[in-house]
Length: 304
Figure: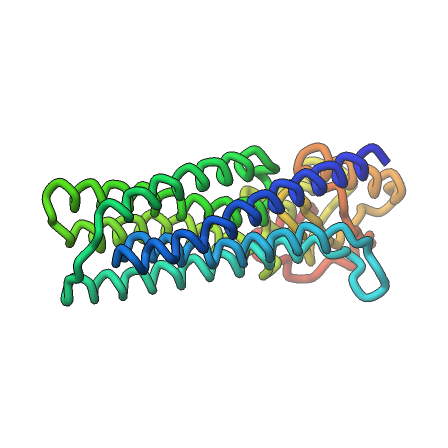
């Protein structure tokens, strides 16, 4: 019960942080769009585009955090926690799409330069930086193991970097009149965003594909469980995956030596999985030694 209470408390905190982020980001987005149009700055418009998608991304993250609280039911026995990972994946893909758009627009600006009003651009970029710092601080103080929060924070970090780029570009334009700095810095920000977006998309996609958690795979369990437990002669049909980061599950078949106490062996396997590998949710099928596969799985350890 204490675990459930802690989980709900963390969920409430995440939703509260996301709601504040939505209000601040969405509120300033309108001003930045207007400023970008009036000043003719691609850096500002790119930043405004970030904030527009960020508002939607934060809304998606908030919805995912809200629906993940729903308890398991007959159709979804694991509950709705995976929705947060799905939201993180969508946010990662969206960030990659934004990077592509910024790159295309920057190339167009290089080929067809346009006049940029430095002072309005500088004013709005500074205000945007302040808003983004506040929003990022709100999200960064949340649950760092939550992919959903991380995805939302990456969107805001992209905005923060975009605001910094717009400020630098505005200062260069005001002092030198060199307008290519605007699309040039936009490309730099896009490259920085792409790296984090790709990492988020890859990590969330790995979980959605039922991939094994980092540092833990089926081959490791097949080999190490029989090595650690004398009663177990073989482990096979091993599957290990995650519902969300930090919430891992495993299912396996374990063949027990003849004459061994099966209940004691089962308890020993569960204890080993929990204490050594952090796998608290395990589905284990016990078999007799003669039920072992004739050909053990690749990387398997088999005694006898």
